[in-house]
Length: 387
Image 1 (tube, helix red, strand yellow):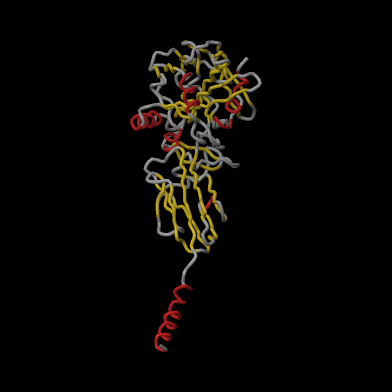
Image 2 (cartoon, helix red, strand yellow):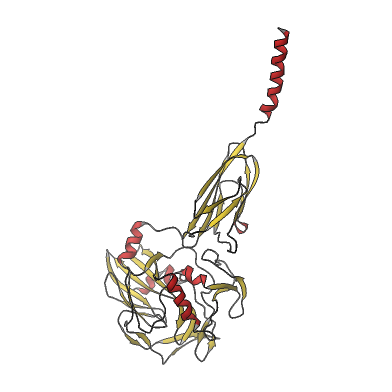
């Protein structure tokens, strides 16, 4: 009988260390959001168990049974790519967006969720907003002499480097910028199309345009919807980005636009961007006819040849009528909404210039810059263009 008791005591003693070794664990959930999606791009994550990737292949990873204590969760971008992270949040812990890292003090049975956000154009629009944008999408009539078509921002950025400072002597800041990595804070910067300059190598813009059209045959038109509660009016903005402005003033990147105004479910007119501001047209077609001037990309409601003024800033603001006329005859390609991609223009605007400076014939480089539409008053308050 004694022998049995001793055996049981030994078994009990041996069991105690195993119970003491039971460890407390927690869970870290990692989510990645990319808008627009980065096709084929994955980000690598460390600090929550074995290395794993999220992005094109998956968007969420749950790491369970992690030891309690401090975990440093880090996101790594693909080799050769700039940081594209625009936001980082965790339900617990400290985050450092610039380093794409989060420090988590994981407690027993705790679940911490961290979301890495790569977003350039804001949240995706609802179906009703998309339907409205399609309902009033403009018809673009290009001139036969036109060499450029509206393109996607990411395609333009892919042909440019980002420089800090002011043109033409800015320092290289990013050799391969993306929509996600463009600055949105203070500090002068500009996008410089590689291998071309308005006065030195202007012929290269056509070569670059041909490359862009081969890789992405469909043009892109951006849109935004704004509503004015006091009048019950809705403004549907359409924005066009061209690689190069080839007119009396010459500059990389040209943002132009047309805004359709709707009240009580019917269009009441449209505002057309031209050289100096916007011109009102009371036509009430669902799809406004837009005649795009060759080179300058100014927009007109009717085909024709137009006298224009060009304004520029050297020491002060000046405007002058130029001998070159806007050729908006519409004798080239016609682009309807079925011919181009409609993409919502949202998010935070790039604070730098979209090009390497504005050059005016006989004047040279001016102080004018190509401002992001999202930083313009006719984007934030388009209703000033309506009578």
